[in-house]
Image (cartoon, rainbow, N blue to C red; front, side, top):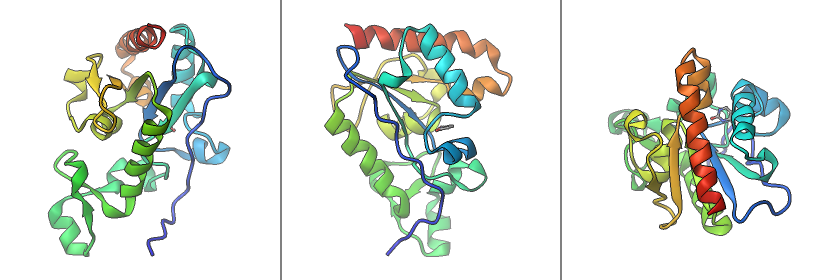
Length: 198
Ligand code: URA
């Protein structure tokens, strides 16, 4: 059996029914504040997300807030979930190659259930629109890389065809001093709201 000995934070499910469809946000993985409070996006990134959601006319409580990985990786490095073929061979680990490569690496088989869970949740909840925050969820939901070129450009969810995906920045990128990206982040959320309300 593969027991994963890492802090775990489940998705935040929306309270009540909300607008004409479900709005879903997908981040990377929880950090220490999320582990402490047992909820995704409650630290500095979450506060910036909440502020921008509000300004875009979206209510956080009506959103499904998820992460690709529900485990906090050591040192908050999402690289923990991926290995190159060579590294996997060297440590005798299996890879979940069916999800495709992310930056030349595959997801470790140990964490494949996280992608399966994300897929199952999307298939069940059928969100009207999904916003991906950063490179990891963009890859998870579309198989694509290149967040800079793709942000704000409508994609399709590879797990459930027909569900629109809007890639945008991760709030932590803005918090790292890239404040010029905040209006674009806000614009992407506002465009996504239009899809939600259509
Ligand atoms: N960053 C994420 O990607 N997810 C969280 O829940 C918190 C910070």
